[in-house]
Length: 314
Image (cartoon, one colour):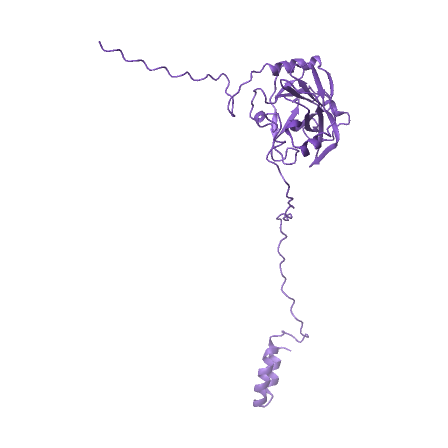
């Protein structure tokens, strides 16, 4: 009903009633402009927010507490640098680990990394033994050598090893060893003791599988000896950690009984291709100096000149 008709009907009513009806009809006047039954207006359209393009935050990774050690091996280790720290700094002195291409005296620099997920843990480094030009099927053999002081045996010798492909990615350790060999030579360099893979010493840390080559030398090592880690020529490479040579008489009774379970080594005559690298290492002069970097061609300071005596008075 429109407004004009409402007011026309109100004029025909008594004055008192018309006033009340007028007040009651006013709200109806705005409900529509014709006699069409009233329809509620449609609600205003609401605009939805645009979807967020921000990345969904990932849940925080779970942390696992592990126990670390301050050193990569036992304190009685006869090797000077079992953590390869001096190797990482380029030290080339007697007693440190030095790498040669097998059957030659050509040296090469090695890469050393620190990883908590290795047998060395927080206390030592992992040395990479891989020919820069290696493929997955062929490589030039690398021989890593270090000298150690000898003494009365028996000796427990071990080293942890993992296998990598030519790109440096971890791979399962080859069943045939992949050409890897760890040996110990006596000071006279006439024979070598071959370490064997211990089937009970296998660790899976992250994506790497570590195996331990181990053996026991039952004889005395008069004049010391040399440990050699050789990669072979079957491609890829290896990573080595925590080499150790311990004289069992220096251990406690409990530690000695545990070490006696190591398999006894097999001795063989030294190969001709080993002699060149062993001879090159043995030719390095030994320098007994305080701990620290050995400066090449360093000269000892001259002693101060004695003060000249004053001439006697005549």
